[in-house]
Length: 189
Image (cartoon, rainbow, N blue to C red; front, side, top):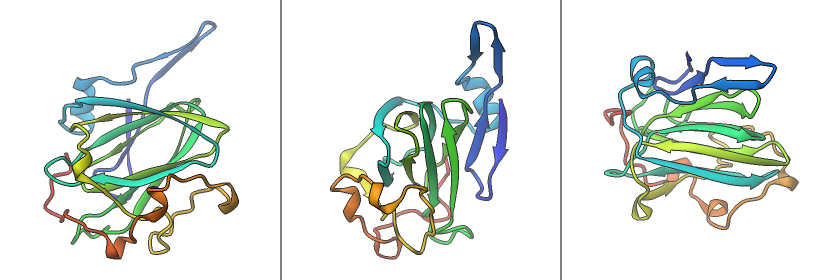
């Protein structure tokens, strides 16, 4: 696998090595050994999958300590714009984001470390999205910021009239008003 650094430390794009032939393709979607050698040392404990239709925007979510999570995400069907926002107080990249297009054909994966809010927008008719988490989901530790906070400057690439949000995602606070419990000293993994 090829690991691509982004503008924000710890956030990585992972490009698997794909073997194509007349039968189709094969690739190793995850190797603990190689991930630890090239990205970081972590142990994923939960795999999740969601299915969404065109225009769905999910996020921007995070879990508060002690249930913070790193995520390794990918798309197995369709296309999404995936976004990670640095919410670590004192970080030189606080409030900045990295966005990457993940598709069933590019097979890219996106590593979102702890201390980041995460979300995605569906760019295809339908998307099946999978992600590995290094901590278990804990509903009492949910946190979120507004996906459309103008201070973040995220172009979700979905027209306003086509956006579909959950009731909860439509009412998250702006970054400036959110309960942020991360600081620059929070371990990324």
